Amino acid sequence: MSSATPTSGPPPVRRLSLAGVLRLRRPSEIWFKPALSSVAAVAPPNLLLLALGRLDLAMYTMAGSLCALYAHNRPYAARARTLAWVVLGMIGGLAVALVTASLTREAVVLVAVGALLAAVQKALCDATRVGPPGNVVLTFISSAALFVPQTLGQVPGHLALAVAAGLWAWLVGMAPALVRPHGPERRATAQALNAAAAYAAAHGTGTAPARAADHAPARAAGYAAVQAAWQTLLALPSTGARATTRHALERLVVRAEVALAAPADTDPERLRAWARALRGGGRIPRTGEAPGDRDELLGVDAERAARPAPLWQRLGPLTPIAARTALGCALAGYASLALGIGRPYWALVTAAALYQANLTLTWSRAVQRVVGNLAGVLLFAAIVPLAHLGQVLLVLCCLALNFGAEALITRNYWLGSVCVTPMALLVTEFAGYQAPGELMTERAVDTLVGALVGFLAAVVVTNRRAGNRVEQAVTAADRAREHAARLLAEPAPDPGALEAARRGLAAALTDLRATADGAAGEWWGRALPQERVVLAERSGHRTLAEAVRRQAPRPDRDAVTRTEDVRP
Image 1 (cartoon, rainbow, N blue to C red):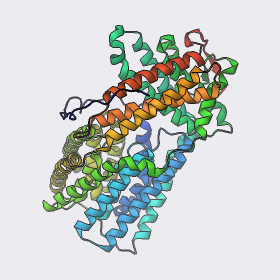
Image 2 (tube, rainbow, N blue to C red; image 1 turned 180 degrees about the vertical axis):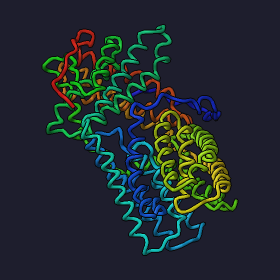
Image 3 (cartoon, rainbow, N blue to C red; image 1 turned 120 degrees about the vertical axis):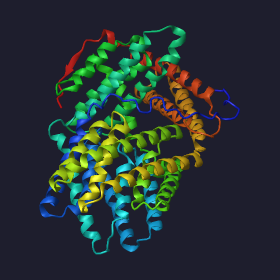
Image 4 (cartoon, helix red, strand yellow; image 1 turned 90 degrees about the vertical axis):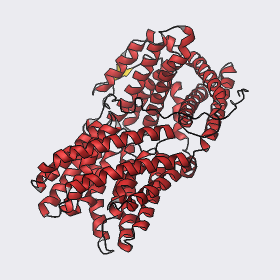
């Protein structure tokens, strides 16, 4: 284990920058899938309610329909389970909100319940890593439902509408499996290959002294992509017809991991060629491995047999984030009430949408939220005259904005918010005409109030556990490195044990980098052990490279690309 001592002295106070906060990124590779799924899930229930003259019930069907936004990067077996849990979570939050609304109309109580629901939803979504859009959609629905007048007798019927729409959203989310059943795992593997190729290509440029620092971001991105690919493959069934496809993809991810550990022995173009071959529906490329290469995958089988950490252990480190969410949402809602705003849940949801892994990212999200919402209010002013021409146009405008929000949000959060804001404002008119000027004013004020109060709550509730988590991550990485080093010291280590140790070390280093980056964005925390982090990463990657040389002496540049007789 590293003997370096942690850095001492007072923790630095970091300046919150605006640089790059609004910069547009490249769109997600599958940006159109959540966008189309959202429209396909929302349109039929809304159009049916429109035909029945009960568009006022659309909020309840949208609770279920919006579940179709989740789990688009997961293999379909795992997606089925995730979507089912999302639907149950959505119905559970909606049920609490509706029952509360039927029992009391005290705004102070409603805001408190909404804040607690938001904190629970945030913690559970982060602990289970459900992925985007995370807790925001759940909180939006439950918070809005709190302020809709209810009676206990109406609650079962409204929940039934949400359940029916949720079942439809589940079917929409699973429908692509009929066309391309292996699409998610092929995409994840291709992303890992491309990330590894980018690092291998960068490793061959620049001067030697600058290499470690200049290429660290590319290496971290590569390991994150590889780890994501492994998690995707580990979610696949281990037996049956899909096992052959899974093993073929595992071999490609092994090659991506090898490239990250030994980039000098890697041909980046070959990795990119394999990635391109995975994009379509053709055969899965083979890597030119020897007959004994099955040993490389024994570590994968060992990881598959390991049980994940209990949920309560994953929730523990998220306590500061949950506390921020509860306090920020409550104060934002109460500030909105104090200003006489009739819809305090808008301020509550704005605060809930801010909280990210650390304060720096929370600041960035606050800026993006304010810019996007204010621009969205202006877009609403331009659209609302058209929407007021009839309820059919109102529904169609909402569907178009729904598509635009999901299509644009991967470019930058603020750009997606430009469409989300007018859509949310138009939805309020499903129950009847609303004065546009009043809606726009209240939404703008609630956005500013929610962002300001929510961010101040994040400043007040410090995440003092971040430093402890870095210490724990460093210790875990050191232990994983020592375990791998002991196996490497043996004259003939067991191939499965060595592969399991190498995979464990790679996962520990990925977790260390993510934990250190998250803690670095916090204010007023303890000084981070930067020296230990650097030493743990350097020694860990050296051990990985040694394991690659011992276990995979067949460099990619000598391989001949072939194809596995495996189709999606």
